[in-house]
Image (cartoon, rainbow over all chains, first blue to last red; front, side, top):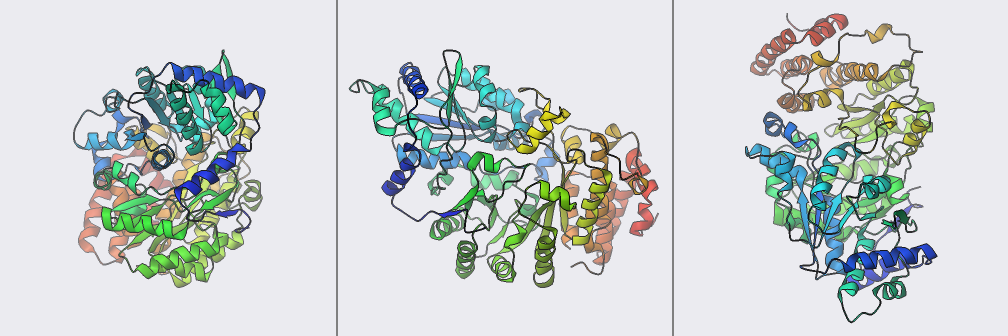
Length: 559
Length: 71
């Protein structure tokens, strides 16, 4: 499986890379409606003469900024990771249109930084940080949970009287609502490196009085746009959908756009950076893009297409060395959805990192597929600095697991866990579990509970299912009017994956929320719990799997 | 030590959670860190007394016995 869906991207000169990327979508035939769309975009851009050739890409806060608690910042409990999507956009623009500059504004990080400094950090205060001299403004919108914040950002961007664009996973799913809102002019669906640069190219021709017919020149040069959506004459026009699968570019120069020292100081991307990699300056990195799996609850394959695209080993190592020597980074948090996608490539990468003999650790809190773990792989992971890893399990119920279309089996998960327990017990091992699947009974949830205990993990990450728009499980739930799919666009409320974190982030406690305790040991396991009962079961799961029942409290545990 | 470190980190954000304090205390005792044990137990008792939810939860599930905690 690993080989079949894997495309290696060789290290190649920029010109070659452009040629490769250009070929990907130029094979698309121009449709009649596309001509209308291109003409509309060309006319639209005519209204905006170029000024400074600056693109401002804004990431919204992950939480309502005025709810940030100083003691949570002191504990580095807020999640902050480098705005990788914006950095890749910046690298692509630098490569394709070097006269343009991308300004990266990470309002999630700025909210945490300003709150820590005691500076005003409400949404309106944060919006003041967006520069007002850019040619075009973009929202990098990844999660529905930040819908309110995203819309606040868009209202501000609209006020600059310049083109507003949006991209990212959630923009891809909600493109119609975004266009109908009037806050966005163009939505880039799926990965947008190539199409954004095509837009800039068209804009240059529009702005150049010597080009008689920019739209026609665009068509002659590129054929058409793909994955772009706009509103022409009151109707939404979508250009054809293609998985362009651009490779991850070299973003070493882009790291200069971030105050990396400050990121270390105020937050971390995961708890593992604060515990397993304690005190070590961290960075987030990407080795592979995409995922071989097509799990029903996950939006990755819908956004990027199935399969992974790996970077050349030398490129990844160059980036590590840059972060290590130039930025002082000592811990890498891999953001890959499928880090070990190709055995040969991964072993080469890990062995190369190990041979560098750096004082470097890494963790993979996005987990890896258990099916990729054998003794050789585990050994290479540890020797290259792995201090934390784990596997997505999701459920202990075999029938449910099969329905999720996850390339995993309980047998392979047991084997992978056993390899680490037997040979690498110093590595923090964690797996992820989901509770509250559609029609899930207490019996199924207890299967998950029992399996998590059987694995004797250092920690079991658990979440109540939050169906993401654009996933097949969301569509299934929508068909039965599940309440989790009934929130309208603009009304989606932020909710953390655990009830404890959600309540604390909103200033509440369990005393405010739960009015009774259920003794789950005596519950009728054929019953299907309601939402609040699932949340209480999650508390029970946490107490008896992670805390009271943790293997590290027994003689089997590792001190 | 893995669990001690993890609960240490979590408690900085959730200092009102008596289960975290109780497990942190148990880790400390197993590791022979008596000062840490006393510290965690003090916070555990206070957090438990302050929460009707957790008081009921501990009672229903007999957590003090489960963890071998001193009253």
